[in-house]
Image (cartoon, rainbow, N blue to C red; front, side, top):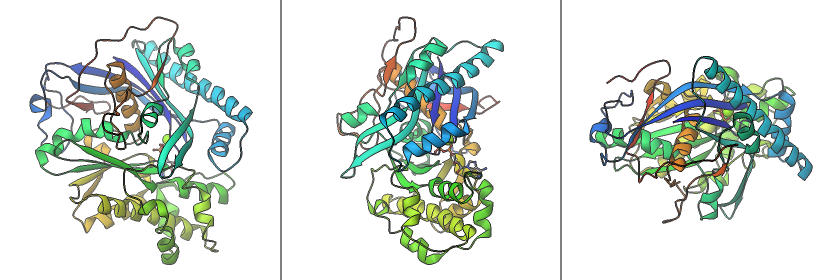
Length: 427
Ligand SMILES: Nc1ncnc2c1ncn2[C@@H]1O[C@H](COP(=O)(O)OP(=O)(O)O)[C@@H](O)[C@H]1O
Ligand SMILES: [Mg+2]
């Protein structure tokens, strides 16, 4: 089935739109993920009556938010007190932008002879994740999905996190659902855990064990603090540290680094999730120091790497064989170098998802396409904080103009492969 995935992460850098073709291979043919691992692949993984999925991206790109709208998103997600009128307007305006991004992508593929979408999955733009006593109580993603259904004339799955929270879960992070399906068989073959790290605004880790179980949690900030500090210092002209070049010229302020590492979120054990409300400028401003900008950025970049590695060490009695990194942070060479240096002492390899056939910028888009496929086929999602028996179907369906007929439910999937961009999967 053809699924369009729409989302904008905590960085609010733009709409990630992807058109993903998902095929469910009932007899487990030879398609498998292009990884360096000697994974057993679909032939021997799990119950052969369950399908093995193959995901292929027909198109994936990021459509930047119009700058004025991005400022309104960041204001709504930040500390500013926003009115109901502003939330209402943003909900509609963002829905229209998501709709345009989806319609443009589908239009291009239609011009090239492609089929229309069977389903769209829209995560929306998170503006608040309500956490009390360490647990999620609510979450708010903006971008009314009716605009998307109207523009594409197809059903849209939205509000993906709410059911898990209402059932006692944390509603986040989702990436473990993808990673368990993607890396489960490889971890089993290797006999060691495999981890993934997504470096968006917030950093989240998934660890897939050889028994196929997965743990996933937010470690703290990825790029959020560096982005916020740079945007403030340059009046919004620069919104990220391109390539990590500024961090590379600065000197890490060791006292500030130690103070930052005392943030109470870092001491909590997983499962846990966080967002901009916790890791915004207030974290930096709590330590008033008159540092050169390069030194501050160098220190915050190091803070991200140290907090990720400390969290991995604290949570994993058995460290993973490698950490596969995705998200915009893979382009920050300084951050990646810190991660490699720190994890070298643990003999943990650090590489990017590109080495395993997945564009680091598109991995979250593939995740949301997978969630769409699962819900469409009646498969609930177990997130790290989901209470026993509390796994729920993710999302709410907005009907397009036509009646919707759901397929026969599946009981499980065995795993998934991703066709590398522009290529075919090697046998
Ligand atoms: N070339 C680059 N150099 C350094 N950092 C980058 C680069 N490109 C993107 N980033 C970082 O990645 C962030 C966006 O990553 P993304 O995975 O889209 O996060 P989110 O899911 O939070 O939107 C940007 O805000 C920026 O900090
Ligand atoms: Mg993004």
